[in-house]
Length: 256
Image (cartoon, rainbow, N blue to C red; front, side):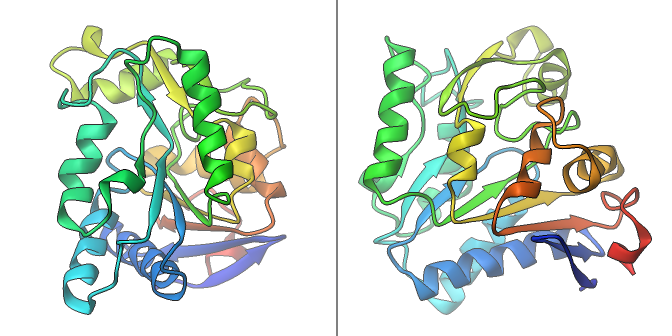
């Protein structure tokens, strides 16, 4: 495990590999569940947290942590994809995490990308988060353009859950999950920056040299909507777990 050093209120953990990053995140999530069995978790999808979920399933099976009272809220979902679509985030979460643990299906919340009234769906989603007492632990990835959730550059920081138009960079990055780039949805529902910032604790994961610039902007850059993740510098409890390639542009004093 690499070293830890605070950057204002931000704690940074540098790991030597994607697997080490994933295990560190899984242990943090498991600890949250162990010490507060009724925790509200904010969950991310995509390739970055995938191994974290697998490691968390292993911990669940080996240590017998209990998910039966856990409530989960996913960050986002594509608009126009049904739950049974293999590219939907609902399908991703079921296949890679939920069906392997004892979580109550009624406690799982993922935005409905097929809702007839998307505006109402977004408002209802935020209301459900509030009714659950807020998010205790929010897991985030980060896009190459420093987006978090599907909050693209120049998004309003005060936004709550909302519909977003995906940037071309995001569409291109997600095309690897689809047969053709033209199949990637152009719109999504995403927790907004305000919703994310209301989480009690945030853990952001990043690996690979292609995320190095985004990580630098998040940690050391100007706080600006042009780099949505930069707002995390103002959060009261943020931990960033990144591998050495993703930390390459950070100041040396944070990585030694």
